[in-house]
Amino acid sequence: MIEVIALLTTLPVHLDGEHVCYFDENMNEDEIREKIENDSELLAYFELNKNNVLARNLFYHEIPEKFVFRKGKWNERKTHFNTIGRMVKISPAETERYHLRLLLLNVRGAIGYEDLRTVKNIDLDNRIRCATFAEACLARGLIRDDEEWKKALEEANSFEMPWKMRELFALILVYCNPAKPDELWALFKDALSEDFAKKFSIELAHRKAYIDIAKRMLQAVHLLRGMKKKVSTMAFTGIAATLLPGGRTMHNRFGLNLDMSNSKIGPCSKAWKELKDIDLFICDEAPMVHKRALVTIDLKLKEIMNSNIDFGGKVMMMAGDFRQTLPIQKHATRAEICDLTIQKQDFAKDLLEIGSGKWNNDKDEMKLPMNCVSKGDLVEEIFGYAIADSNWNEVAKMAIVAPKNVDVKDLNSRVLNMIPGNEKLYTSIDKAENEEKQVLDDPNGFPLHELRLKKYAIVMLIRNLNIENGLCNGTRMMVEEMRPNMIVCRLLTGDRLGQLAYIPRITLRCDGEYPFDLHRHQFPLVLAFAMTVNKAQGQTLEKLGIDLTKDVFSHGQLYVALSRVRTWKALSIRLLENNNERKVMNVVYKEILDKDD
Image 1 (cartoon, rainbow, N blue to C red):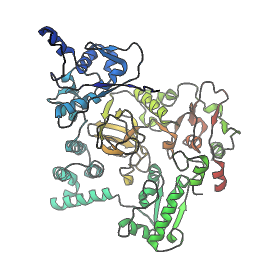
Image 2: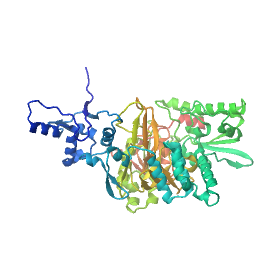
Image 3: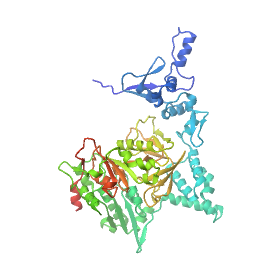
């Protein structure tokens, strides 16, 4: 028995007047002309968009899901049928067709070729008619060249200090792989060294700016100094690392690979010498550390110090709370996760008891206090008044958390729609290595293909860009300005609170979820009005909503969610409508806490 999962509809992509048309030899001239004008799925798509509201909200390749092509027209389907549209593959050598296809992948509701070549200029509030499809792709940010980085630096030069420009230039060099970095330096070296030029000769000023950029790229370690001892502070996650003076992530400090089974630090490296000179290591978030990481660190320090003493004789201070989240391991059982670990008030007391599982019944359920249960719409309860009053400083102190990503995306979309002002859409440039693919979804841990932002939107950085300056995975920020090639944000966490950051597009690689390597060129940001519970760890908020219509599923998640605020009154928890007993899951691995005690 063969099960048909979906019907594939192949869609043509052709330039104006170049579509293939078949006709009967007995047709007269008028019949042939009519067939030429109508016998094209693409031309029929343009016509459909002129009058059909549903079609105008769909991409070309999504049309077969809702419409069927008959007699030269797209007609709305009367019955549901599982159909997927796929545009024909086109070689980049066919420049205009290739870029036409790229536009069709990213532009909804086009009514013709000229419409696809017309791009809205948000800065000037007008529309630009491009001469070619390639030019239109460039104007929409769908393809890139070094012009993008040039414009980003020009934008920064118009309103920023030279040291901030050097920071942005360093990010572009490290993460964006410009084709001709030497030309960028030649164009902007005067602006990058303007502050030095006031004190030194032009040549020396350029040299000092060059050295300063190199230092920012290397992110040299800042060690706490005291009593002639060298101390290194670190944490397992990037956001927690920014809360420590001179903090770094554990992976960064010890050069750990992804599975933490090896360290890339070699005998002749600077990091080797730094580790040799450090007397005390302080590590926060110890419960999240995989025991394999400690084994690797122990072996590396023994190798560096040429000693068989634990950690090479270095002092290793581990700090943390085992009520919070534990190491992450795909498909691991409860016992396996336990095996991976290293071994103020009424609200604070309640939190400790909840984190220890003392409120749980024999089904791992606990009853919430009545005064923290949401009585209405959670989004309105948390953000409604602050957004209505345009109190953006208060908005920055609020958030909603949920166990599942799918709920987080929906919540973020709802809050963004509440914020007044124009929305700007940033579309990623995707490339599948070695073959061409249409990616239908967004891989985990990747920025969205379509990033929708407004001024005052709360966003989170999802890659480490510059840990020294607080730009690490998990940093929450508020959007202050949206430019074509750069997003200006204000930091909301860490010791850099209130400072501005300039975020360029970077290229990210996903090589695990697909049978091909996906490269996505996009701003490394996601909306963060709402976050998953795990992403919320390390945040401190004034007001928090928790969506528990779906149960927490991992040790410590409920404790982490509740402990983001300081009182029960600061919480608003949404439950299923029929949950009159206010019971929620509270997953606690008590065997871990017993070891901790």
